[in-house]
Image 1 (cartoon, rainbow, N blue to C red):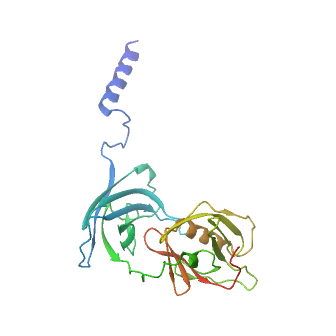
Image 2 (image 1 turned 120 degrees about the vertical axis):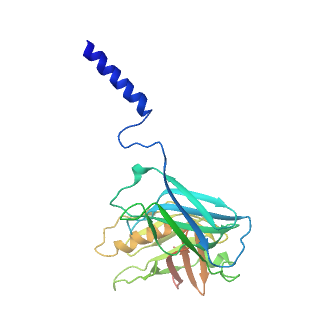
Image 3 (image 1 turned 135 degrees about the vertical axis):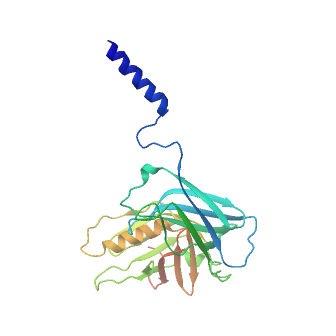
Length: 264
């Protein structure tokens, strides 16, 4: 009985010392990634400027990056940031990086254009981000929404890589239907459809349904196109070319206006 009582008292004392939820390796301090972000251009941003930085899992190239944590700062830079994150979501085998943007009244003005690794593979928990100016589009690039909608857009590039098709492959394309706000088209093998929303230069696709044909070739293009569409946040039309861009201003897919049917 004495041994039982002593064991119970020892356990209660240990719990009181460690605190609620404490355990081996636990820390009362939250895990954070810190850093600075600046741009070299001599531009005074207005008070409406918004800096956003995201901690992302970029381990897989064939899927959109997973956001682990984020921070937002309003006003002109330079910026000093701190991103809190859950250490349990960090896998030493994976790769993590920071991506920053600056928008003014909803328009992207600055973005990081290179990878800033953190946390794993020898990287630390601090980084210095250099923001690059996003070239301004001509005023009339996105004035005509009809050019975006109702056009048979033929896929030419995924990211910065030209799409190469076999002789008997389907023609990957995209059609946006203004009357129903439905997007449709095909990859190199499967067809897809789903909703979309457009507001000025902003473009977002809803969940896309895709057929499940198992082709010998072409599945890679199907998968990459699906990821590109889901990561799209803005678009630009230049000289008959439609460019889809993600939240960081990176072109994820490029299309050319084609001679196909206007409705898919």
